[in-house]
Amino acid sequence: MFAGSKGGGEAMATAFTVIETAKLNGIDPQAWLTWVLGRIADHKTNRLDELMPWSYAAQAA
Image (tube, rainbow, N blue to C red; front, side, top):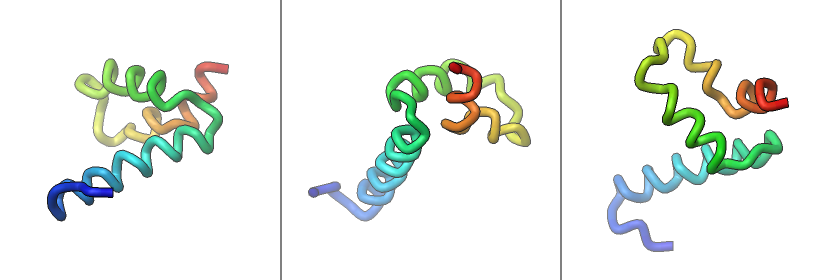
């Protein structure tokens, strides 16, 4: 797969990791990312664990 640059490859690897982590937790990656992006601006940095896929799965259930 062509990423364009080293930085592009690193960004792609990060995105793929996040997406696959969501899938492994049994949730729709697009729904989870939409949920996270709607909350991250006002979220405290010391509580990022609340935005992880497994936290979303627990709240969605």
